[in-house]
Length: 123
Length: 212
Ligand SMILES: [Zn+2]
Image (cartoon, rainbow over all chains, first blue to last red; front, side, top):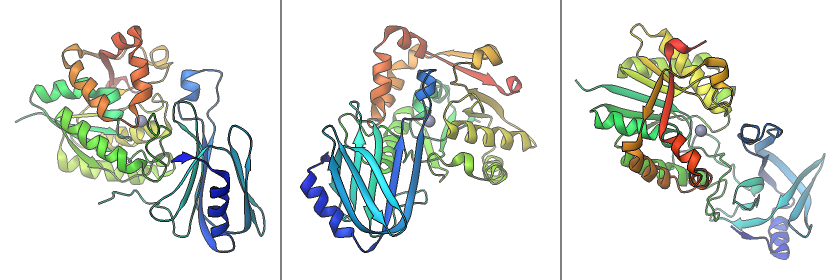
């Protein structure tokens, strides 16, 4: 992954507009947050392979990171805190936000084909 | 015949971080140890530092790292095929049957797993629970050693019956920790603190009769 270049990311988001895509959307502060800090609260959510079609999508710079919103016929897909991106060898747009130790805090990924969902042995 | 040991944890790295010294010592004592790894840790938060993995490639890295770790520890690995973060949502009875059937084939003398309810990560608790239930259902149940992580485990459960000084196997454990490159950063930070390092040189386990 590389630091997001807004104009490039916008072009990639545009490519998927108007066609059915699979989305992976996730945010987490880790399963150990409240183990290491009793005041902390474990928070996380993910949806894998949501099958949606967005009319258009937009990436907004917040200074430290980026927000992305995808407008659906009946709603929205939204992610905040994205910092890095890549288009992988399967032409999927992978975006993620990492903290200073490289830990993933948020991810938004868009693909024309489903993401691996069964335990995947890569063999 | 050599002692047969099955280690049942959900993530690639649980075997090393939680029980690496104990595993290395059992192997040296002549035991045949197999790690039944529940998932590929594909939903892990650590992507390496600096980042080299992403959500879609993490499982590839972690599987490869585990292969190196088990070869350092001198054990075999079997993948159980569950998906990271979702084990607690699988039907418990199905998992228990899955594990019991496999255990009955292997006839281990000892099963090492997480102490259900005291292992912090939901996958640890869920797979530990299934493993404990599977062992209880066996006609000739093996010995159980249970790894607890939670901060209140000693307050609630008392002292673990087993405390293994793994100082002599520390080098092996350290080498195995380093193979888990995508995940090791936080652990290595922890070990740079002298007090934590000393603590890590003893691995503690509750026994089956300490279950409640
Ligand atoms: Zn784990």
